[in-house]
Length: 128
View 1: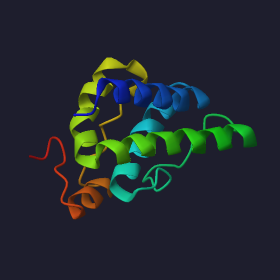
View 2 (view 1 turned 30 degrees about the vertical axis):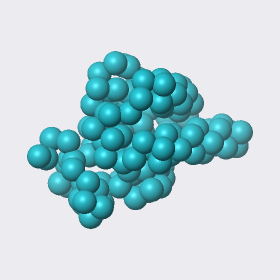
View 3 (view 1 turned 90 degrees about the vertical axis):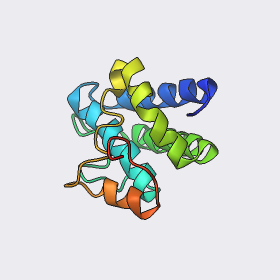
View 4 (view 1 turned 60 degrees about the vertical axis):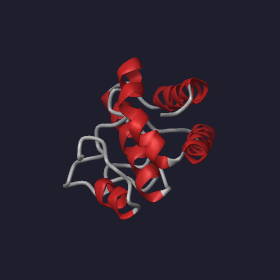
């Protein structure tokens, strides 16, 4: 599990990402797909769904901010390790409504994330 301090930072940055989008179902899914891609492929943009919120057109400054926020999220992942992050996502998703899909897409066989995680010898929650 990750530290409480890192959990709070992670939640703050992910909620900021959520708020950059349309702050509804698309933003919820963006968070889940982005986190899954970051853990599976080290790249939040390598999603099976989409690379940024699409409910409205983002300005260039918003796109830059989005990238910077995902870079902050990646630092938390690196500091804590991917397995610790995987083991923490469900609990984090339960605490913050904006992050409800945070751990949703990790163990679907029809998405590429699970295969990327297993290739790194990571244990996928729900697949044990």
